[in-house]
Image (cartoon, rainbow, N blue to C red; front, side, top):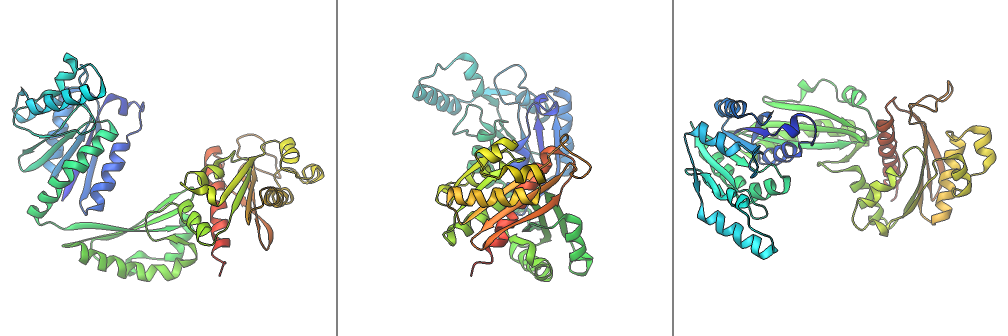
Length: 417
C-alpha cells in the first residue's frame, strides 16, 4: 500500500522548525508493512496545497497531510480541502460539545475563535482529537484515502494512534497488496566503507524486490534489510535467509539486531553484570555522561562524571599529574590513561572512561591535528588508551568520540564470562 506524506507550513520550509512528523509517521507506517512513496512539504499557499493534494492522490493509495488546522488566518487547510473535494464547512455539534467540556474542565475560556474548530467539511469523516482542539479529517478522493491531521506533534500522534492506523489496516486488507518489511542490524566500531567491503557484493544474497541500505551515524552503521512479499511471514522468512549470510561476516561489530541505541545495550550489560562506570571528559564536555543519564535508572551503575576541559581542571579536580600534561600535552596517551585511572579511583567504579582531544577548528598543531582524540578506559584488569583520528567538524568529532567510547566499553563488558 503506497502512502504519501504532505507537510504544510511556511515555518517548515524556512527551517524555523524541524519536521519531526514525517520521521514519526514514516516509522509508523513502515513498521506495518506499508510503503512511503513520497514526502512533500509546501508552504501556506492555497493553490500550491490544492495542486499537491491532487498530485499525491494520483500516485498513492493514501495521503496523510499535517498542518494548517489551527484557528488563525494562516491556517487554510480546511478551506483548501473544501475547494479540492467540492465540499463546504458546516457546524459539527459533537466537536463543539467535546471542546466545550474540555475547556470547562481545564478552567479555560471557550472563545469564539476556539469554536472555529467545530466548523468542518460537511462530508468528511471527523477524527476526534482527544488531547487538543483541532480534529482530524478523512475522505476518499478518486479511490485514494486522504487524511488531514494537526501539525502539533503530540496531537497528530494521538489522532493517528486512535483513528488513522485502524483505517489504514482496513484499507490494506481491502487492497490485498504486498507488504514491505524491514529488519535492522546495528553495528559499531567500523566505518561504512569498511563494513561494505566486509559484506561484499550484495547481489549474491539479495533476492527479488529486496534491498540493503547502509545508514551511518556518529555511533555506528545501521544496516537495513528490506523485502516485499504477499504476507509479513513470507517477508520475514526472506529477510532471515539474507541476514543469516551476512551475520557471521560482521559478527564482531554487531551490537543489536533491532533499531536500538548503543547506550541502551551498554546499560543493559552494566546492569546484567552488576558493574559500575564513571566518566571524565575534556573535548566532549559531558556528552558521554549525558548518554548514560538519558537512561532511566542509570544511577544504579553510572556513578558520576567530571568535565575537565582545561589543563588546570585536569590537574586540580581530575588529579592528573601536572608533569604529564606539561611533558606530553593534554591530548596524549599518557594523560588519557591518567584521567581514566584517577576517575576510577575517585568514584570507586569498575570502569572509568576518559576522553581528551582536539575537537577544532582551533587548538591544533602539526603534530596534533583537528580530530585527534585519545580515549582511555580503566577496567578491573588495568587501563588502556586508544588513539583516533576523526574529521574536521567540531560537533561530529565530539559525537564520534562519545560513540567510540561506548563501543570500547561494550567490548570490555562482552569479555565478562
